[in-house]
Amino acid sequence: MNFRVAIGLWLAPGVALAHGGFGQGTPFFSGVMHVLMSVSVLLPLIAVGLLASQQGRIVLPRAQVLLPGSMALGAGLALSGVDSSVLIVVGQLAVIVVGVLVAVAASLHVRLVMALIALVGALCGYALMRADAPDSAVVWFVAGTMLGTMIVQGGAAMLALSARADWARIGVRVAGSWIAAIEVIYLGFSLA
Amino acid sequence: MVSSRYLVLAGLFLPLVALAHSDGGASGTGFVNGLIHPVTGLDHVIAMVAVGLWGAQLGMPALWLLPVAFPMIMALGGAVGAAGVPLPGIEIGIAASGLLLGLAVLGNVRPPLWVAVLLVSFFAIFHGHAHGAEMPGFANPLAFAAGFVIATGLLHLSGIALGLLWRWPQGRWVVRGSGAVIAVVGGWFLFT
Image (cartoon, rainbow over all chains, first blue to last red; front, side, top):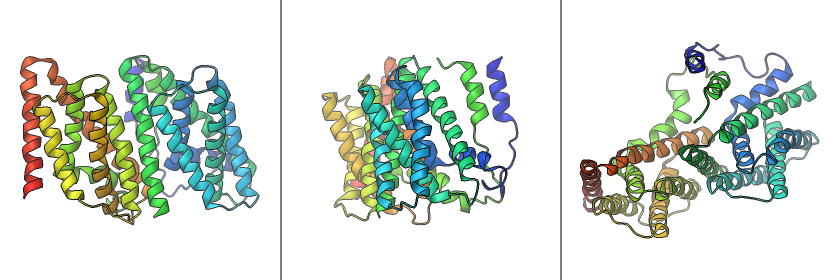
């Protein structure tokens, strides 16, 4: 029955968002949508979600709090006027590392995973705010990005956690390798 | 087995892409262009299918390890190519990859796993470099990279799907025959 509901949802016509822009609606909604609709934000968050799920149930709830928190911290860094392209590159490198770790299904120390998640979150928040900082109601915008982050990371982690079959676990590792590969190519473009 | 409730959740979170005014030109600069790029060259296609075929023929863990290693190393080559760093003998390397990987499938060659990974990774650099150097400058880099990597993965997957016929005696002839075709096409590219 649920499967039919899923098919129905997929087939249901979506609301055209052309010309809607992220700026329309409330700043909070705009923040959520920035996370959900931007590949540059989605990839790091999915990667972190997959990594957290591979590290077990101790890491997962902590990551669910740490990632949005660190994103807010990074956003604050951008808002305070720090302007550094190096941070963007470091953020891309961090995502590549996370993708590779997912691909090899590395078992890591909890503190190391937390440090990586905090780094990716902070630099992701910094990049997002540096590129698309709203003119007003910044706090609501950042709150929206935090909620969006929790949704994406939590969703990715839950999907990965449910992967008990061998092929599904391999699928998670393949997803990690793809994320790493995409970020490597993107980094090449950025440095070109 | 992924629970159907997660399918429902996935359906809810599917992004609604606005297709208004997309005439192929706008979308063609990003994800779609990246998706199409790897399948526009037969020399690339046969090699990527061969990677999946050979992986399936070798069985676990090569079945997933080769297709995981290939995009990551290919991405490194792509980044180098996008950055404009020259690499000698690219076309020879690409054609040789089709020939040698096809011969490996045809002859049911079973080297140690690390040798297979090393060989596939070596050829991946040439494929990545060629794509990276040819990438259109007007493309949305991240969306392009995402489409590019996903298309590459799907080509591997088609090779794996064909290679799974290896389980049946008649299927082995199909797999080896596919290897022969790939080797002939690779040889044609190499010597003409």
